[in-house]
Every structure is written in structure tokens, then in C-alpha cells.
Image (cartoon, rainbow over all chains, first blue to last red; front, side, top):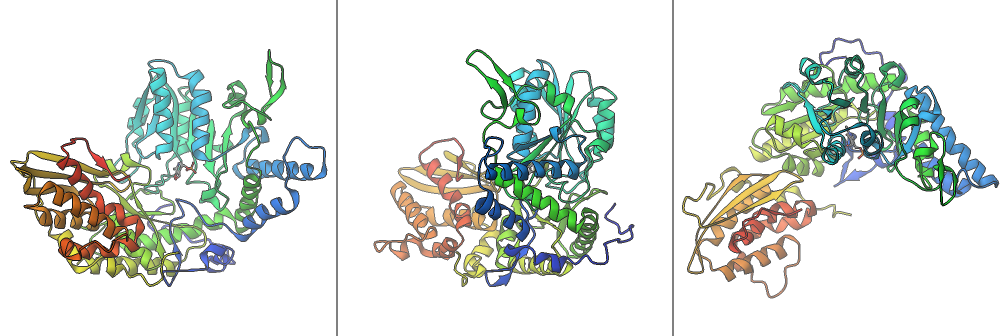
Length: 418
Length: 154
Ligand SMILES: Cc1ncc(COP(=O)(O)O)c(C=O)c1O
């Protein structure tokens, strides 16, 4: 997959983004009197009616706690919760449902691994390897761990297209390196990293790899067994699911050996004041009453995405990105930030002499929602020598017409500042 | 809900655009005796205000840095307005400017005191941009008080 249109479009005949957008009630509104053009999907995507309904149905019909009651409602809620776990297992092709841990989001999943796996495996003098394009949530937990342990965070460099330099990466795979933590897809640049190769190179030296899939799961098929990653994390809200729910996938062997992250109810099998026996996976890592409605909503989001077909989504978004990239490079005074060969759904750019904040405000007035700022990736901004970018990020419901609206919006901005 | 009627032109008035493109007093004051930084980590706006402050008078003032059109124009017009003012006059203008951009102007406020700064009155319709308009002013206040630490509007 590349930005030059070298792939025959294979969107299934029935795929119609404009039709699909009708499934998302929030998209159907005016913003400052203009039809909403929602291009901030990398921050969070909109939710289809089926997800909203699943959450409502839980509260209206099945509301009760899980794994505890013998009554019917609790049984229904427990079933719905555990069915969603099976849906996640299938969605990412995990070997076992025991490897699917529900957490608040990608951030909590990374913190869990840092606090549980990291604190037992990382010793003074060791290193954790992250990449130059990580989201803050895949930097700071490692810094906190390394600070506590007297270890170091090392950085895999990137080139000026925003691609990781694998020759340099190889040199950093030293005996001190205890873990590699890398994004599957960069939220600031859109780069799709060659994670399969990155994992293989680390495994050749016995080093485990965590993949931050927050920006990958809405856009491409993920097979954790094929990747052979040791940990894979993502958030529900960027893949048409609710906020407050996410997933940590971990290889069973590693999760078994890891100490619990939090203590409480559900994560134990027996407690006396002398000794507590921890529950089996996945419950060992799910202390307390979880976000039951969130899990059920995530299950509904997976069902929706599966029904539409992730392959169709990938092709459609790729076509949109190619189109948007072609259109924007025709405009004068535009610099695209992130020009990797392999990209997904993100168009980050700066306009000569115009601050992204001003771009965002003026586009908003045209009904166009984009993100402006450093996208929680300040090191990326420092690398490119810019304070911020404007970022348009695409989802399955975006259309070429909306890209055209964005281009007209950019021209309006440029005219105002001319 | 935002009023549907707000117009982005209320925010980006010509004078603001003009000052953002060609800011006044946009250099490092060589003989400054006070300075302070203003930093907005969220959008990366970063300015340094330089003051020459003698006999309770801002005898000269300048700024350096980068930021959006609103923050830059605000810094530019602030420096133009404050030259020759006393500390208490500067503080009063700060308070009045803050009321202007947060839509809290009161009856006692004298519009003429702000002069051209009233072009920032549209900012109050764009709540997320208030901190852009006020950034340089906070830095100026901090320089006046001779606190050398960077100030932040976050
Ligand atoms: C690449 C990446 N990783 C991690 C995160 C953090 O996700 P959350 O805030 O949902 O925990 C994000 C969110 O923007 C992201 O884009």
C-alpha cells in the first residue's frame, strides 16, 4: 500500500461511505450553520447507532453486575460481557480469550504493562526502546518506570519522511534492551510501521515487543499471532466504540507470569487476611467492577466494523488519503508532515506563515472539524522543527466531497491571511 | 451551544491580521532590565516580553517568539499600547483587557482606555482562543513583577 495509486481499488461494490455516514447520528448536524465535516477521527471516531443502542439496551434491560449474581440479569450481563471478549479475541486473532484484558484504553494498557511486566523485568542499567514517533502515552509510562529503576529510555530514530530507520533500530537491540514499545500506526504522521519486521528483529535477540495499535485497529486487519507481538494495546473509542474502554492483549505465557496491576474484587479466587490467591486470566488483571456497558459497546463496534468489512474500510480510506494528498499538494504554500510510503488515514500539514491554531478556528467556522496542535507527540514536532500541525484524519464514513470541502476551507484560510 | 451567528471575521479583524503579519516591537530589547516568558504548552505558543522599566515607567517594551495570529497580534498591540505607562496603568489595562476578551466588561470600564485594543472584543465569542489573546499580557505582568520564571496560560 502506498500513496502513489499503484493498487487497484477493490472496494466492494456495495461500499458507500455517504450511506454509511447515516449510521452515525452525530454526523448529521450543522456546525456554525454548515454541514459537519468530521475529520478528527484519530482523536476519536463517531459512534454508529448500533453501538449507542447496545449501551442503552444494557442499561434498560440487563443492568446488573457481572460474575457475581445468580439472578437472570446478572447472567445476561455476564454473557454479554464475555461474548464481547470473544469478539475481541476473534477481531485481533488472539489464540485465547484469556489473553484479552479489558482496560480503560491504550494508555492504561501501556501503564499496566510498564507497572506489572516492566517493574519485574527491568533492572538498573537496562533500557526500554521506543520510537521517535510515539504518542506521549507510549513514552511517559516508560520514563516513569526507567526513572524508578535506574534504566534508560532509548529512541529508534526516523527519517524526514517519518519512517523508522531500521538499521539504527538494529544497533539499539543490545543485551540491556528489555522491551521494545512501538506504534503500529503513528497518530501524528500516519506512518504504518513495519511492526512484523520490527518484532522479528527483536525476537531474534530474545526481546519482547509491545505494539501500540490505537491508530491501527480502526484501519487495518490485525492478527496478533501472525505479528507474533508480545503485547498489543488499543482503545475502543477510536474504532467506533465508546470512550473509557480498551484492550490489552498479551501472550498467555507472559500474562501468567506477571503480577497483578491492581488489587480488588474479581481478580482474586480466595482471600483471607493471611493470604490471597489470584484469579486466573483474564480476571487477574480486571480488578473491580469493570466498564460493563463500555465492553458491550465495544462488542457492538466490532460487529459493525466486521459487517462493513475492515478490508473495504482500508481500501476506501487509502483511496481517500491518496486523493486528499494529491489535492493538497496542488495548493501553494502547503507542507505535508509525514510522507512515509506506508500511511493510513492521516493527513498532517502546515501552511506557510499561518499557525495551525488559526487554521483550525477558521475551518471550524466552515463546519470542518480537524485537530490542531502537537497531537500528544511533542518529540515529532521537535523533529520537524514546527510547533504544531493541522491534522485531518479519515474514517470509513468520510467522502471525497468532504475532502473537497477541506481543500476549499484551506483556500479560505490562505485568502484571509494573504 | 455557540451562537450560530458568530463570524470568524469578528475574531480575525483586519488590524489583527495586519499586526500578526507585521508585528511592532518584534525584537529583543538590548537594554531590557526585566523580561519574562509566556508559554502555552497546548499549542506551542511561546513569547518573551522584554521591558525597560525605570522610575515607575515602561520606557520601552518589545517581544520575541512565535505563536498563532491572535497571540502575536495581541503581543504586538500590547507593546504599542504600554510604552510610557506606569506600573499601575499597565496593571489596569491588563485587567480591562482580560475583561474585554472574557466578555466581562463592566460599566466602569472606559472604552477609550483600551484604544485600538478593542479589536480583540471578538475573542470572547471563541472561548478556546482567549488564552491566545491573553498570553503576552500574562508574561508582561510577570515581567513587571520581576518574576523571571516562565508563565503559562494553561
Ligand atoms: C498512537 C496512540 N497511542 C495511544 C493513544 C492513547 O489512547 P487513549 O487516550 O485512548 O488511551 C493514542 C490516542 O490519541 C494514540 O493515537
